[in-house]
Image (cartoon, rainbow, N blue to C red; front, side, top):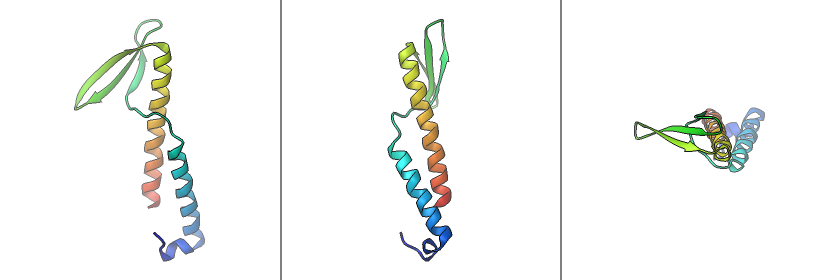
Length: 88
């Protein structure tokens, strides 16, 4: 979409930022929402909502690390999308 305002200095700056955000999206890994909390020593649990119901799953330490990363990626995704919408 090439509009007249994209030819201004401010428009070009916004377009560069938008393309930078697109690249960040491409670099995101696994995505999920919810939370990871300790359950028992050495055990973790992941909790999320599915069709308005709370779902909880037991996780190992390794799984908890992966889920925490996926949750952080999801939050980053939401942040990027919010900024992209504002620019658009």
